[in-house]
Length: 122
Image 1: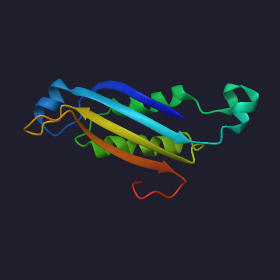
Image 2: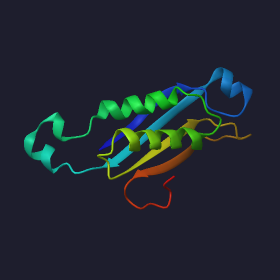
Image 3: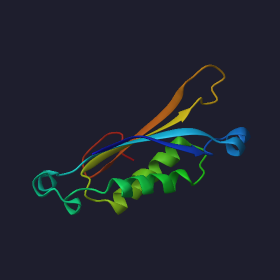
Image 4: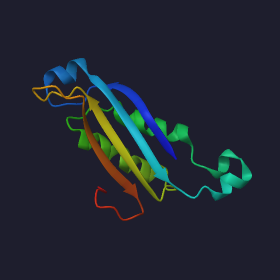
């Protein structure tokens, strides 16, 4: 299951301008789970709720952080706690036009969660 390109205006960053004006962020989610029952039954009860994933991401994006690592880490922890049906998943948080002192389209952090082994897991 994937949710790609969730867009938020949020106030993450270390600099005053970022905290006051905010910026555009995108979040991408990719999760693995057993979909064999849903493939047969064609019922919502046998799959993961996309809306719940979105609600978790939105809730965490609404909480201000200095670091993208903190935002991504909170999203991972919340999905692990609230949606244990995902055996493995990843969350990518991207910040548009980060303050690098030069031209840069995005800065990104990707973190993984779930029960599977992964080196980038928090």
